[in-house]
Every structure is written in structure tokens, then in C-alpha cells.
Image (cartoon, rainbow, N blue to C red):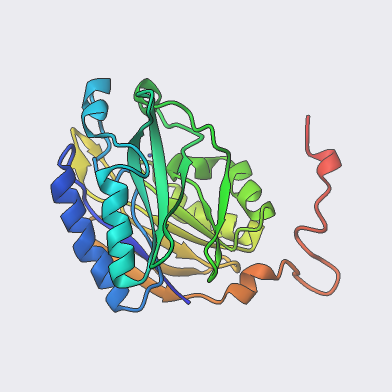
Length: 264
Ligand code: ACM
């Protein structure tokens, strides 16, 4: 199975422009045979909002909003699964930093995740996620979804892996330098594949680090993006490796856990 990250540079508040940019890159990934394509966090709206009003103007309902409908249509046309980060406004007007997962014919909208660990000024605009960590069985793989800063909390990926995730889709807008180094270790700890789709560029003085990363259950970096270019990374993965939690005939990283000693 081939999987991809889309590394792109969204422009703040320019939704139509960002959707068409994403479309070109998703098509590039599909042409290279990717069946699961991951987009950055807030790929449709940009990130560095100044006011809540700005977010309200661009956030949409899920699934009845322009971004989800756009992704559903593209997934149908290209016969791919897509995970992408988007600003969500629920029916009561509450705002979430969310991600949607959509699939090809007959599937359409599959589900959403709302970011649980909000980073810095996101706390001024968004509600913390309230749906838990979710794993979506899309037939070709079990996909766990988390968003950017969630990676900093090992519990996020551990929870997804314990719930059966084989691949972690990780839409991101990274600004700190650590995740490209840390994600291969998270992948190793949980024996899963990780796809971090980061953005590039700068918004209002905030620079994003690029370096989108696909890591293997053996902590290998299978693909890494540049620091500043829009590009796609496509690699073949072997899910059997993610299903096997054994390190040798006596150690299994899940069965060997001792949760009775982990809580304080
Ligand atoms: C982040 O969570 N966007 C750093």
C-alpha cells in the first residue's frame, strides 16, 4: 500500500485558493499511486489567526461544509482516502481544530477528529477536542488520527495504537523543531507507521518548519520533506510490520506493558 504526505503552503484566510492548491498536490500524490493522502493541519484556512472573528469567518461545519465536500469529491474522483486538517464550526458556533477523513465511492465522509491538545494561541479560539482519539477502519488499513501538538503527549499515539491503529495520520503546522526527530521514535514505541504532513511558509512572522515525515515501525525515516518547498512524499508501506508487536520470541511491546505501574 502506498501512502503520501502533502506538504503545502496555505495562505491565511484564502480558502478557495488553498483548496485548489491542495487539489493539485493531492492529484500528484494519486498519480504516484498513493491510496492514503494526508494534508496539513488547517490546510484550508491557514493557521495564525489574530481574532476569533477571523476563524468564525472561515470555519465550516463537518460534513456539510465546503472543505469536506471538496475532499469527498476529490476522493471519489481519484479513488483515494484523504485525511486533512480543517477549521470546524459546529451547529452551536463552537470552533474546533479538526481533521476529516474521507474515502472513495460509497464511502464519502467517514469521520472527524477534534484536536485534543491545543497549542499556544489556538487556546484563544478553539475548544479542546471532545471526541477522543479515533481509529478509522478504512478496509485497507486502520488509521488513527491526531493533529500536530498531540504528538508531544506520548499518550495520544499510545491510545491510538492500543485501539488498533496501524497507521497514524498526523496533519501538522509544526513551528518547533522537535517532531521530525521524535516521530520515528513514537512509531517505534508503538510499532506503527506515522505520516506527518506539515506545512511550509510564514504567516504574520510565524515560520513553519516543513520536514513532513513518514516513519516506519522500525524508526526508519521513509520520506522527509524539505524545509520550505511544497511537495508530496509517497512511499510503500507494509502493514504486516505494524500488526506485529513482537521484538523477538520473548518480547511483545504491547503484551509486555505493565500499566499497573504507570500511573501516579
Ligand atoms: C501546533 O500544534 N500547530 C504546533
